Each structure stands twice: as structure tokens, then as C-alpha cells.
Length: 470
Image (cartoon, rainbow, N blue to C red; front, side):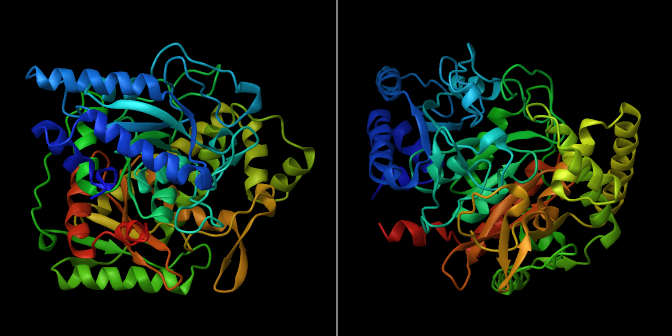
């Protein structure tokens, strides 16, 4: 048995009972790092000696009959952009290669206070502004299922560390799918919490402060129960999430939409998703109609514009050609970014007002439907593509399609501040994992996780297929 690949809840039990020491668990994770990271490049900074000392202290505390918290002795890694005092937070930008914050991000401080032992940081794309994971400082992170494929982004290094057992769980972030895309592409689970539930302090671009619209910090793990373990330790203590009323799949009524209304979707992915929905329906899930396409399209459009405005901070001024395309009614990615540079506060308020109308329409939809289930990505993990964003393509049903068509699913939850969880639902014909997401009402994070746990019990854990290869 490779204890590094066990769920965090099982690792915690073994450490608590003395069947496994914190030192032994850390060393098991480090063996995974030594074995797999040379080919994957997930870890970009480590403090192994310090972690070993903390693990010994955790074991000494347990020997004395003391617990240092609910995460006693669990080894974790954190995304590069999340501050860990004294270590680099580069955001994949050479100009900030030596940026070393002097305090932990709030979420990391919370987890360390609960007994977690952080030993490494994981790779990101430059400024977190990619659906892949590569930068000129640390290079490219590869997918453990197929090293010629991307693990997704921007929490790509995070998902790889979890999938391979380098960490018990991870801390990532998500402004447009950055937890859910990598989770789907690597066969792990990830939660995009409700906006404002988890503190963003310590997850800001160097030199900036303040909350970034649409952005959240959230956990990535191997099983849903690990997300349920970690979330209460991460979120703001003054917020109380309601207890789910549902106890079985038959208690849930879920809207389902598997067709992408703004682009194409690979047939093999759709088939895998439909098979998963059929399994859940056979297990008692009540399947309902999805919300109106107008709600999805309006949310996608508003989300694109607000998302670009939220991510402006570190970017240079746009080329005149990008501004000209926006003025000519183009809404491609670069045109939206360009327009965001000259967006007035009045215009932003108008977009925010439109967002609130969409949030009210979602509120009405969720009066009679518990959750909304969709794909996360249009394909399984695609080959690496390090061209400029405007030139990148994904092959969908044999045809190259623009990347920006594929973000509708991720943006649904970000622009409306709703929670969304990535659930592995099987392997496609190419042997790569497929994920679906469940989106719930604002601050229904525990209900979303309850559904995901029940679904996982029916659908199984595709990650076991990867681990069996080792």
C-alpha cells in the first residue's frame, strides 16, 4: 500500500491512531516527488528540511497525547501565487522571481494552524492567465496521464501534485476555471467556493492589495471527503454554511446541460458525461430541465468582460489594433482585455448591475432545482500549445476551435459567485479523465459537496486507473 496515494481522511486516521507517523507520511509524499516530478515539473520550490522538522514535532506531540489540529501531520503543497512566508510568490513572472512575502496567506495560516505541514509550491502560468501551466521561470508542467498533454491551468501544478500523491491536498485558486479545469484533466476533485467564503488575503499580485472580483481560493484533493474535511478549516470563521437537507441522490433534483451553446464539444467527452448522468439517474437522481440558454449566454458575456477587467493589474497597455477590433464589435479575448483598460467606472457598474440581474435569475431557477450539472472542458486534456493565447486552438471532433469558445462552463459560477465542484466521471475513449461540474446557489457549498460525495460513490474514482500503472 502506497500511503501517499490514500485519501487525506485516511492518512489523517492512520497518523491519529499511530499506525503511521507524520514523518513516514511526509517521506512517502517526497518519494512520489522524487519519482515523478522530474517528468512532470509540478513543484517549483521546496523546503523539505523545515517540513521534516515540523513532521518530527507533530510526532512528538502525538507521543505526548497531544493533537496539533484536525490536519495533524498532513503534508501539503500550495499554488505559487499563494503567499508562504519567506518563499517566492512569482506568479510565473521573471520580474517577480525574487518576490518573497513576509507572511503567510490567510488560508495557508489557517491550514498550518490546523496541523498541515507545507513543504512545496506548485507551478502556474504567467499571471495565472492561461488554461495551461507554463512560464519562462519554471518551464512547463506535464499531465501525469500523458506527459505530452497539459494538466490544465492555472492550478495545473496543484492538480498534478495531488494526482501523484506528492501532497495530501492542495490550495489552488479559480477566477475562470483555474481549479476545475486542472481537476478535470487530471482526475482529481476541486471546489470553487462561493465568492467571499475563503479569504483572498495573500493571494494578490505583487504590489497589489484588495479583493479581486470573481476570484476565489479553494481546495484540490483526491476524493470529495477530503474537500469536506478541509473547507471548514479554510473559510472565513464568521460565515456559517447551511447544513444540506439531502441525504441520498434521490433527494436531489438537478438540471443537466451537456451541449455547449457557444462552441463545439468533443463527442467522446459528451458520451462519457451522458453515461455518468445515466448512472446517477439509475441510482435515483432526479434530472430536470436546465436554465434558459439566455441566462447562460448573458452570464458568459458579462463574465468575459468583468473577468478581463478583474485581471488587468499586471498587464501592459494593449495594442491599438486590439482596441480597434473591440470598436468594430469584436469580442475576442484580446479585444476584451484592451477595452477593459479604458472601461469607465460607470461602465463597470453597468456590467455589475447586469451581473446582479443574472444572479437573481439563478436564484429563481434554484427555487425548484437543487443544482445545475454541466461539462467542465470540451475535450480531454489537449496537447501542449505554447503559442500566444489568440493563436491557440483545441481540436474538437477533428476540427480546430478557438480556445475562448470553451470557457462558458467555468464562467457560469465565477461571474455569479456560485460554488462549483469538479467531479471525475470516467475515462473517455482516449483513456484520459473527464470531469463534470455541479453548480449550486450562492453559499450552498456544503450541499454541492454532499451531491458530489454521493455521485462519487456511484461513479467511482478514475484516479485509481492512473495509480494502478505505477
